[in-house]
Length: 285
Image (cartoon, one colour):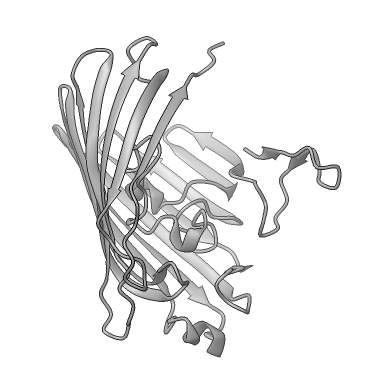
């Protein structure tokens, strides 16, 4: 998946490996039975759990740690990692993933240097045989080659750690999805300062009818290390109303979604509310 670019100085389909690449996914996959091997840029093992609450149409996915410091989570291995080797397996009882990301640079826009990861590793496990309940967890670890003075100046005092647990309960037309995460040297505020964070995301969904759905919940993220001096926090409440005009699958739909924040920027300023109105239509063969 890549951007089509009409700029005469850029390839028509830009799939470069540079820091400003619009490349979203590009991978080779081999599959045998319930086992698969992925190589390239693909959804991470960590996102197996973080993605349990990433179902809003326009907002959300801010507190799990999947997409850190304004990126797609590729450098840290928690979102859509580059240069990655991944093994997936599963059954009716469980799904499991192991992942390793090879040595690579991480162009952090908030630093004056380009930190290098020696590697990142991660894994996830989801258990699915508890009736209407599904639970899972994941850990991701990124090893820096060196922690430089520039990195320390923005709050990085160790390697990149992320952990998350989540569950999904689904009964008839109602479902509740939630995750709880703890991260170190991974999340940043709006000024690019790193902090150790505790986060939770909630997605509630109820299908009022075959054509009408309401969803709501929110994202909450709080710094927890004592040496962080900012006032940054995420405390967003999200509400979504969706109407499907397709085959009652909510693939083809129109929606209105509102995000109301109660958190603060690093300097203490309040955030502003946002509203999104959208249309999604999938072309069938």
